[in-house]
Length: 451
Image (cartoon, rainbow, N blue to C red):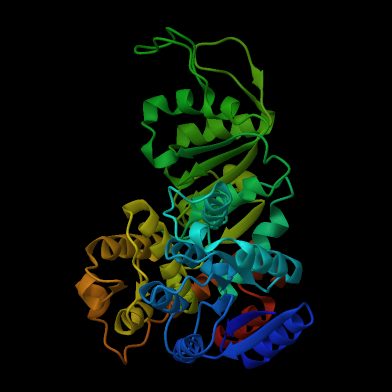
């Protein structure tokens, strides 16, 4: 009977796993820490180690390194949560035979246990280049399963993605409003990928980078010779996105003249390339983004009200990172994984003092700033952990007892009143536009005396 060592500090789960394995012909023993696992491995012979990544005394990778250092050719399978799949790739490089994600699929786990215990020891000690194709394929698949983005677990993040999943399958025009660095283009791409147009093109245009004299050409295309420098025909963004999604970033930067042209194209669903006499029918789903208050721009005469109502059939408010403070460690780990891959580093994580400093900081540059800081710190880190030495002074200098600055009450009251007015008093619609739930809206209305 093959003996398996289960290393997990979740005693209930470990006991259930031991019982389940015993019914399938295995003799299982449990350990709740890396230290206890080492003692068990020194005292008994095991055919397999099944270890969780998160343990009370050390990380699961420490156990793998200890096994390698002792020359113990015992296969190990690591158990990770979905958010820690990046660690699985690191474990494979340290010699783990395989990995499973929690919650554990029993059939998958049993198959991998049998594969690991039946693999000859010689194959497990080969270098990655010499390893059999099945091993390299498993490692590659672990990397392939790394998520492209992280939703976050805070109330603000959950609410945002709930609205994304609600509006994505529709054909409504979506206006994404939020500060710089909050991930507006990512949300636009997600709306496209979860829509019925996912198989068609997604075309992004940075409205702030288009010269005024070339705006019509960028949007609608041009024919050769239509103006100086038009050396060949050009396909515009509308035609390129036909059947798919057109994303206009920083739409508030469009000139008034371009706004008129854009409105006409949206109303008629037809475009005419510059210098051409033919009209081209187009079918696009429009998603726009801005960090400006477009209603204020309308009041100043800088943005057309009719265009605003055309692009604002549904509004998504991007929460700043300071409103998702509980998600900062998750995003930091996520960006660390990206940095490790891009820079070919193997940084394990953040030292406690560094993690605490990052949690206290307000991140005015939002997710983009956090990503840049993690990328830089990953490059600078001398050891396996990112410490305060690698973080910018502004992040580290935040006092431990400092509180995050509160939102400006006057500005918040103004935004609530505007949302209620735009929604004709419908509190559900206003709450959705503000990115909060109705209960929060009612509380804030009472706070500011809004009837």
